[in-house]
Length: 157
Image (cartoon, rainbow, N blue to C red; front, top):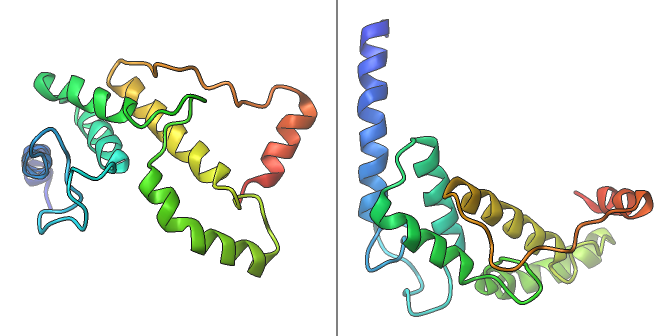
């Protein structure tokens, strides 16, 4: 591919990605796929979808002004009173796998879903930052002492 055709392809790619995201968006909700979702927007789910959309829009430098606050509101709606932002549907559906995996590997670091909640929270905070917003509740579950930081790092996969 020559330079000119590469530049043309990149220019159309940005538009194509934005168009694809707009097709996934219906009724203040970003769907998981064009072919349909297992769950309806009436079920409390879709945090990952909103985070993914926000970060892609940010990478394209094209956050639609009319969708920015909707994305912020969707992401913040998943925040609990301890500051975590996570999708309870993901937590429920991963329960059996987490338990089996913990006993199989004798590694109980994520037995109560702590690592997954932290991961979803971190990704959600990054998306909110991309949208020039902040979570409503500060996240205070950050290790501060040397021993706590060491324990946290050693628990990482």
